[in-house]
Every structure is written in C-alpha cells, then in structure tokens.
Length: 259
Image 1 (cartoon, helix red, strand yellow):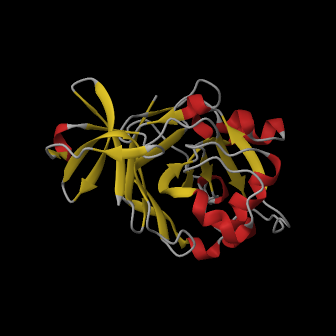
Image 2 (cartoon, helix red, strand yellow):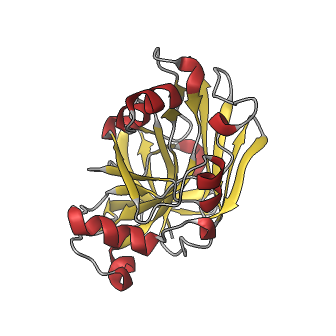
C-alpha cells in the first residue's frame, strides 16, 4: 500500500495511492486511515512530504562501496547523526542553495524508514513490527561545512536539505531494493540496499536502545557510492538542475535546485 500526504483545496490530509489516482481518507497512518472517499487524480493535488517527523535520524557510511570511496573504515556500529526537522522538503519543491558555500552542496539518495508506533528497547527480530514503511530521502549535504565542523549536524540541516517522499510503502523488504540518483538525467548513484552494512532491523533496534522512537520518526539509512565530493572532478548541485532519487517499489523523489 502507498500512503501519501497531500494538499487539496488548502487542506492537508492522507490518502492511498492506487495507480494514477489518490483515494482520500480520514485519520492518519499511525492511528488508522478510515473512510475512503471519492478518488481524485494525482495530478490534481500537491503531494507533500509523507510525514511531519518528530525527529530525523540519519546514518553515515552505511554502504560498503560508499565507505570505500570515502576511504573510511566500516563502522562497527551505526554511525548516527541528526538532521533538523526544519530541513524537511516536499517532493517537487526546490532545494535552495544556502549563502554558505553554495558551490559545495552534494546529493545523497537514501532509503528512509518511517516508524509507525512508539518503540523503546526493541529487539532486532521485533523491529519490523514498529516500522510503518519506507520512503525516499535526499540527504542534501553542505560538504564544506560538514568537513569544517568535524561533525555533521550543521552541514546536513540547512533549510530544504531533506526532501522526503513521494509516499510511504508498507510492504517492502528494505534490505533488497535497487536505489539510484540522477542529476539532470545522468546516473550518479546506482546500487542496492543489500550493500548496507547494517540492515533496517539492526538500525531500528540499535537506535531504540538509546532513544524512544516516536510514531513518524524518519530514519535515513545511508547513501550508496557515487556522491559528488569524491568524483574527479567533484560534482555539486547548481541552480537550474534537477535531482531525482529512485528506489525500487517506491518511485522517484524529484526536486529542482534553486539559488
């Protein structure tokens, strides 16, 4: 099932995507979707980020090939950082390059886990029961600030630096999905989530040991190889470009770049 959050006549709501139509529902995916209404065309509504997360948690160096291209060692446990919730961005809305080092902004296509129920000290074999589903994220990164600070929160948290969507899919195996990123149609990243060092269940279990995962929490699971800063010459986002992140079984998250 594809669960979308949308804007129709200035009123946000949730619905179920079926082909090229959206079926509006009452309620939300955490307390339950109820009362299917008359379907509307997807083209007639604005698709929003599928949740308003209480927290955006992210992992670094969680793909073997990305750790290799970054000349890093494989982490022995998930490498965790936080992105500000104010970095959240809707599908198709622009990623705005900030005044700080606007020529050093990088893309990162990522599978995002959406937590469906309150979770604390969850065992790995029980982690699937607290996952609502999966969506797509672009962990946009200011590389100059990230490397200057020595920690990642500021460089990852500029406004518009977390495009999310277009919807949540609840019946996928998150550890076996093709993932890619295209910049103006050119493939920059192409991999499979099977290259992740830590599985989705391991990530959820690990995080729940130190923090309570609230419904709607979004967890970015890391990015595959092919990021811009390691390329020769480096490739960074420029105004007028379009970045598209695609994950098998979910779809494509597309955002233009603005100065």
